[in-house]
Length: 109
Image (cartoon, rainbow, N blue to C red; front, top):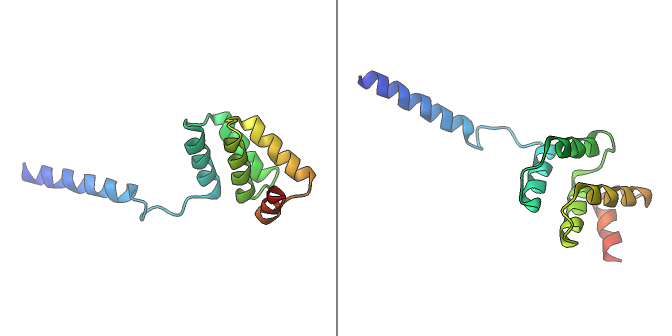
């Protein structure tokens, strides 16, 4: 009986070790951005919204910092909407603002 309990404890400690942040590789920029949207919007994002964020990285090639600045602008305007964030990103792209430094300089003006 004690052997069974010892094995059970070993399994649980291994599970905890695997779930610890130290054991996992660094979170990708996509995952960090998704988590930031969930925190700021106060809800879990949908699979379609996840695809939209992913396309900002893979199709539109936006920098993670630029996406986070667009999210910040949306939150400051109290508009918790992906289409609004997308329009911000499109406007910045039309103005040829590609880096966080360029966007920050634009926002300061």
